[in-house]
Image (cartoon, rainbow, N blue to C red; front, side, top):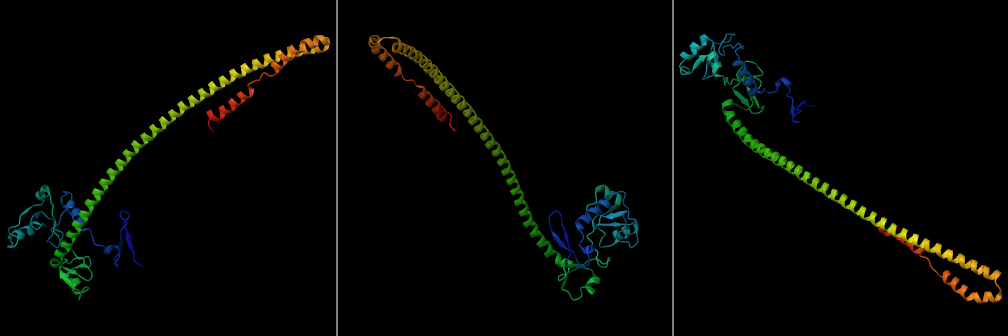
Length: 297
């Protein structure tokens, strides 16, 4: 299988080189920043870049740029190729701020040789020892020949990535604005819904009061009618009782001639009373219609 290193931030998977994690290329930009931070610190002991031994550097060439001991500094200013270089003390360079370091890449395989070639087949930087041994026979070019093409390709990719980044940032800004508009519109619609429901509840309350008033008025009318009919029924019953008593006395205590003489009058009265009609059924019907039509189910 192939071992990979997974980035939890972006999800990118990088295949581990055959030599292990140690063979991953270094972040030279970050390495340069760390070196610059160390060089600008007064607590860091800086050694001469030209001496093989650990000789403390006292001066710095601002043109190369390299850190120099006192002996190398004198030799540096006397050489014809570097006589025009600006050499200042390391303390003065720190006060001005050291912003550049020498771009010297050391071979990761041999540890000492300076990288000067590029293997097109393996896509690796090479030193002279790598060129003569491990990558012998491979298609190679010098770093000076391969770098312009790589820089050109990186520049094109940078422009493409920058354009894509600007588009995405613009999209994020547009989406953020859209989210804000959606939130604002949601609040407006919510207010409209609340206002509509409040008005609807108010209308229902008014309708309820109207229906209750109609029910109350209908019940009052029905009750008044019932009382009136009850009184009429009681009065009619009283009249019938009187007529019945009179008819009973006439039949049992009057003679034939007396009964015959009073019979027409009594008959007419009883017939008139017995034909009186009450509206009890009408009020029962009104109550039934009241509960059906005034209070809808």
